[in-house]
Image (cartoon, rainbow, N blue to C red):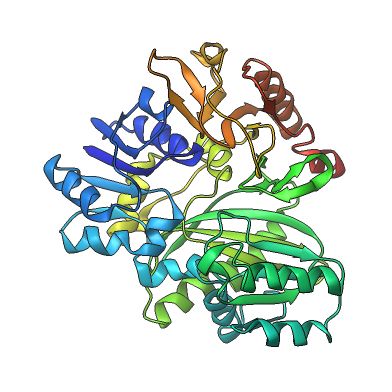
Length: 425
């Protein structure tokens, strides 16, 4: 098979690695890819939003399966474009990707189909939102309706902070058109857990659990980022929690989308909050999480291509999804100053330390090759260093040891990824 992966980050590197393990994969392309992906796939200089060019490339190269890694092209309708050209593609159509593309849609869907989530109100007018805040309890959560690179959620502890947040999102357009509408919802407390799932429109098969760390600094301080590290599985995601979610959240979401005429095929990412009153949905994503994919996919036993084809053909019920009974931790190595302002173009040294090391992975996110062939930094999140272990503590120890194998100027990382592991004992 010839496979095309659309995207350029650490998630797409993990997808490419997983695809390369499949005996079905003869040739892998990635558009646009990055320096690390370029070691296992042929990178193609086509942007993820250049749908017509991507479809033309897929037809020219006779691609058998295209995997869409990123949210923007999914929400923009790339799957519809590929299907119209008779191309096999993994991911939800535009009318289903709205599950991630609009938080207002997602919240209204959950309310209509009684899927557990936080109480909320939606607004398309800043004055109305500001008036509502006068009567609200704090802390409170503000969410830009559209895609905002994982940064469009503000937790506000006071009225003044919330007012400034509304103005920033809706008036100053901090996140562009994503802030044309806003969700204001109650602040929930509890453990956060991420659960990825494969969906074929009718059947849903969940993967192993994970937990992300969004804040830039140790102690969950600083601004929200795309993710500074993650671990899998979550010790807080018990059999009881799983049973509840399978019954009231996972299948209910798939059925709700089908009932709305928005059949969902692809990946649904469930962001959950384990509250004192039970699990609640924080958010949906319509693709693999990043960096959740970097700890979940290395633990998956199945041939990923088999599973994706089963989703496309609506035969997921025939797949027995299986994961290794171990653990994995990912520590993101970022450029100091991320997510606000940072320099790039620094040489990355030590990547050869990962060669032929079983259970250790270095997923490239913001990297490129210099003119003389060296690996250099090219983004805020540069690398995702992932390691497995027999349990979470060993995996964390291995990941932090491996994070020291790599050096580049202005390297920055959090030192408390997986702190919750200790609290679970």
